[in-house]
Amino acid sequence: MDEWSASLAGEKHLAPSTIRSYQGDVRLFTEFLIDARYGWGTACEEAFGTHPVAVAHEWNTLPHLQDYEGDPEARPFTREELQRFLDYADDQVARAVKSKRKGALAAYRDATLFKVIYGWGLRRTETSKLDVVDFGRNPKAPQFGRYGTLNVRYGKAKKGQPPRRRNVLSVMDWAVEAVTDYVENVRPRFGFPDHPALWITERGGRLQPGSINDRFEAYRDALKLSKDLVPHSIRHAYVTHLTEDGIDRRFIQQQVGHDCDSSTAIYTHVSDDFMNTALSKALAPAFAGV
Image (tube, rainbow, N blue to C red; front, side, top):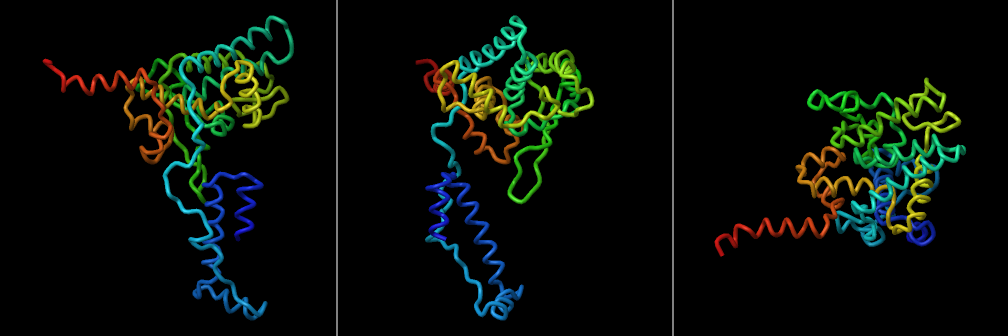
């Protein structure tokens, strides 16, 4: 148990939360084996001449000491960084079209994909699994047409459960305009009208998360942005920017699919300007009339 746990950390470089999850699986399995109600102890004695014992204990497994164990370097895009990133993605489309080189459709697809990640606060895998039919109308926002809501069918699953579904309401008109243009004018040019995927490759397959990573890193590095920025940083930026814009925290929590507000709080890294403004508003009543 000790050597296996050490290899997970030292050789595979897994996150503490992942290691603890694996150790928890071992603990649950051994507890099942040694539970007298199931009779495995007796069966093992008869078959192997020995009986199973617990191997995962408090002293050789990782305790859960804090709610958040993510990389402390992880952060969202600033507004300026995100604008530069999205502008650069659009520029690659223009350059490909102007030079008449192969890849213009893929560049347009990926530029739209990054806008959708931000516009609906999605995870990378959620984005890759979207189908065209996942968009729908929102009677409360008729201005968005058939793109008023997005049905995320492959949300992050809880352990041992299927993917969690959620509906995300459209809130950014420019993002709706971008995906509308892509679906109606660009995607058909890939030549696979019967394929259900929103993001398709030039060979007719579904775009995979790894390809999203590759394009993201190419653009990030070309702009010389911090390597701490990853595709998930765009989702973090969605939460942070909506918070700065005064959107209700509970609404944001539902949009991104968090069970509790503490998870949403982890995603939020509001800017200094926002903090200064919020502090001024908080202190204003105390200094009224001074």
